[in-house]
Amino acid sequence: MKPPYEITSKILRLTTSISEKLGEVKTYYLDKTQPELRKQNKIKTIHSSLKIEGNTLSEEQITALINNKIVIGPKKDILEVLNAIEVYEKINSFSAYSVTSFKKAHKLLMSGLVEKAGEFRKESVGIVHGKDIAHIAPPYQNVPYLMTDLFKYIKNNEDPILIKSCVFHYEMEFIHPFIDGNGRMGRLWQTVILMDKYPIFEFLPFESLISKTQKEYYQSLALSDKKANSTPFIEYLLNVIDKSLTDLLKFSGRKLSTKERLEYLVSIGMNEFSRKDYMGIFKSIGNKNKTKYTLHNN
Image 1: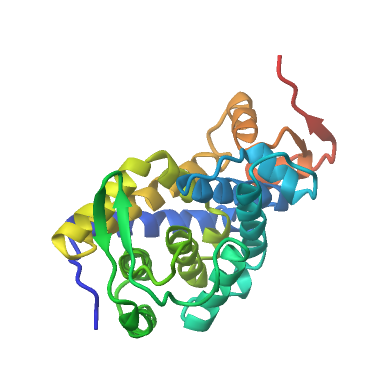
Image 2: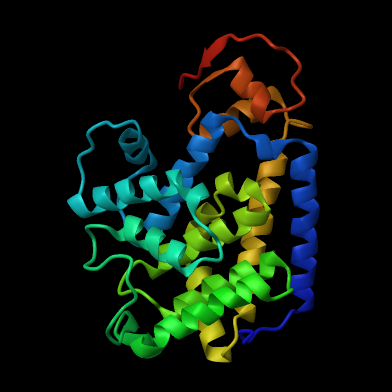
């Protein structure tokens, strides 16, 4: 069955806007991003998604872990990051429409953090915000059937994948198939679904904007629960994706000053880069000099 939601004028406007921006991304070859920028965006994605779940490690610490360096911090937080690094390094191996692949991703993501990682829950759960019970998940006996139906929906329904990825994210959160890790799995699997059609989403860290608008994220989830359909959550997430693409296109190198370009590189953690890296991000630059540059703070 198709999950309940409405395609509003706002959703239509946002899907149109996103589709146009995805076309621009291809036009400027921004889907061929350089490895260093891809790495920095992966760091941002991991940091933002885990920060929402209370992880305390900084982007600098996550970078150190990626580079196999020793980091001092809470053991649980370090393990969460190490697991996430492994998952995002293998993200291209997951099948967007496979329940088995979905469980495999959860096993990698939550290994050592929960018992029986990668298995659907065998007990009833409720979500508590403060002192209030915000949500009672469906009975655990129903989880396998609900998740099978959800995967059939995203595979077979003819609505745009942009909308279906948001619906999956909400419905999975509602079903709450695992004891823990549902939030990060919702964000991860939406990326996997979108990547199946638009590879750019592998290194478009829209989780960063979710992290910055965390209050609205949870409000849209709660409002969708109250309305018994995912429309508010779809509108919220499509707006996040649209803004993320706007930020990407803003730095395509067409109308930026040298100072603005350098400020952007600093903002994504690229304090050291070659001319080739620079040209790979800002496509309008024509010099093929391979000089290496290092930025220093005054």
